[in-house]
Image: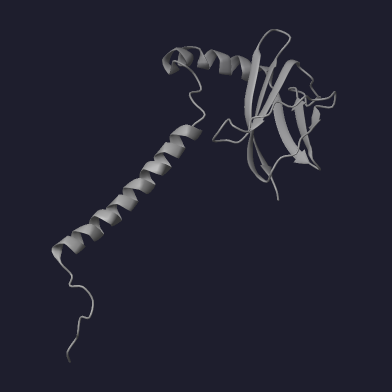
Amino acid sequence: MTVENKGRPLTGWTVMAMFVTGFGIIIAVNLALAIHAVRTFPGLEVANSYVASQSFDARRAAQEALGWTARAQHREGRLLLTMRDRDGQPLRPEGLSVTVGRPTESAEDITPHLDRDLAAPLDLRPGLWRVDVTARAPDGTLFEQQLSLSVAP
């Protein structure tokens, strides 16, 4: 059987051009993805992790001693926050602050205004959301908790 080549001959320059083009595409895509990852990174949680770690155990113990629990739900276009004390009684702490955002970036962060029932109208797109709750106990103890919230389509 005879095979006829009716196109251009496959030379070393053609093979080199194919390799350079293929690897160029791979490198370009990797660079684009890396640049996008760095641009959407929300940043550092703390400026100096060593300094923050020095008081972490004391802050955690004080917060656990409060016995507070927090839970977030999203129903019918409303964010519902439930906070309870050690005895399971509803809690409405002073200085309550809530921030809702995506787990991986801060571009969509929202700070809703909660009413007396710890609810706020909030239209969230389907997916995973992060709810950061910060409050202060009457004795000055800081309560911080990060909750996960899944919104169904």
